[in-house]
Length: 359
Image (cartoon, rainbow, N blue to C red; front, side, top):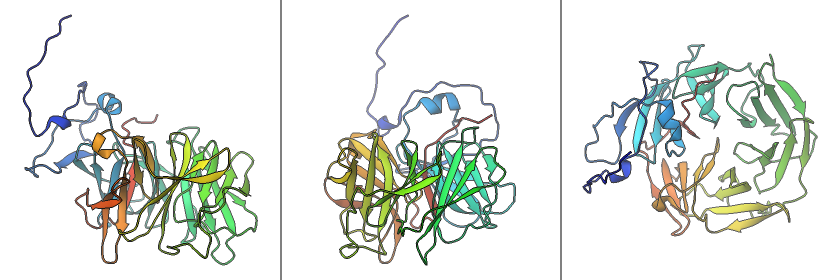
């Protein structure tokens, strides 16, 4: 075995190199071929390299932004780490176009089509699993999430609130079940934030508009409203009630909530749950982490690049006149609009790219 130093030249593409192991391509028609390279002088340059699961899964990756610009079944997948955008088309068995991306996990996305049918889709390899119809699905649904891809252990949980009395109804589906199980909660009012719940330490945590938490235990099929933490804001002092964007995610084993105005000239407020004191503690520095936030699904990862440290990627922010993707620096307290070419994503979600096909 011998080693030698390879002569290198400084180029504009130094940060885009990575090692990969070439393998024989199993499928000739990849469902997500690279469309173009962003942020380079030659915007029309195409990549013809084939993506293979062996090399791709071991490579340094971050969440990708999957989005639609119009209702035509075509989706784009943006890899912000490498500045590459892919195109794919979602083909559902019903032949009805997908209209909403509801949530994501492990590279799978739950989609809602125009006929209110639900599907679990891996957009990179084209896997589609149809979920049982949820006849009562309507505008009152507050959140939905799931534990894993379509395996024997997959559990999908969603909940709705009645806007009249703010009571809660839970929907539960486990792999192999023919229908959804409906669990009725108590009548205690709960004003849910406009963000999906997350599964944290085996239970479903739902965030309220002012920072309170409500928890569902899937095994016991019971709800409970936590006495603590106390709300971040009282109802009288909520500075953005009705226009807020709230997020709930796990960061390094901790439960984290994020609150922000829709308008880009206001600061982002981050809180970490102190599980010993059961109180929200303000976070002013992400300490080497990067957040990827969206109401449908949010992720936290150790910053892959130094320039990403202490930053937040928003799938979309709203101003008085526009809707666009943006990053936010916790250090400078400023936004940088449009890390993605699209100016108005119709529907979008962050997802962890995954080329593993379930048997």
